[in-house]
Image (tube, rainbow, N blue to C red; front, side, top):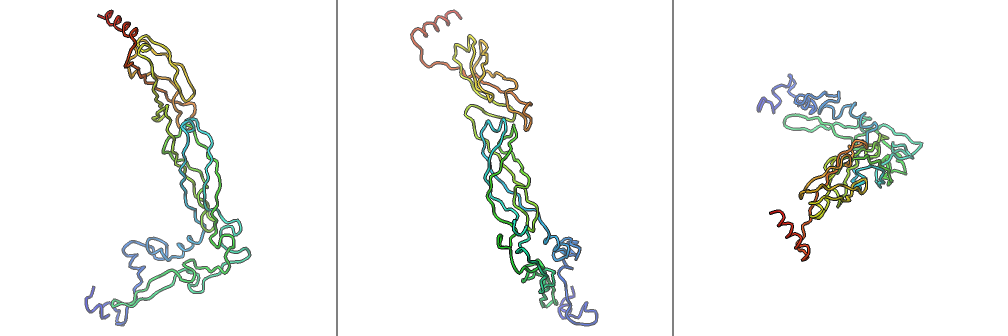
Length: 300
């Protein structure tokens, strides 16, 4: 601001002409609107409120688990087993990382503040900065004896099998949340959630779009012309459908209420659509050919 005079301390020195101390937290506050010791913005990095929040219980991380289920399970729902590994609060120390019967004590290096002040001399003056205390690593507390079960971490890695309730109508790619089955939080904090990402296996018989189900049914050209009945599979089992006389290739027949249910609503179901695939033979016996020729003559 003052050029060479400013470097020499001749300007803005308040008459003393000595080196001027500058706290970087004040600079950050002026640019970013921090609250100094109030815990806001950059100014809150070393504030007492922020340190207290770090020491207290913190919610654990959420976890993801990819689950593959059968087509029918996605339609009707049910229970599935999943083997997961997550962090659980240590039963020995209850999450505080201390050996039972011991206590934490304040750090003598930083006076329990978790930070120490560092002064750096520069041509612009002495810059005073804060850094995490190297003795307590920023916690402000010293632990003399850690819990032997979790080595002071407060959590242990545990493998377990959880029972998942799959709602009816779930679709490929949807997420299901299982509360409190994620990792346990530090300092005895609550566990996060477990998110199940559903992958539905393909079914060779059906195609699904939302609540609608589609399939194909093969019929002979004679049955398509004269009409008949055909047995087709549905998610509820085989059903008999009526093939109307004169049905054209790719005719679509609707089976009302035989589709997939809406998510979590088993009685609210879509439809099943059957596309007729008419089989036209590539070769005929002499008798069949004669009958077809006779039919063609009748149509003239």
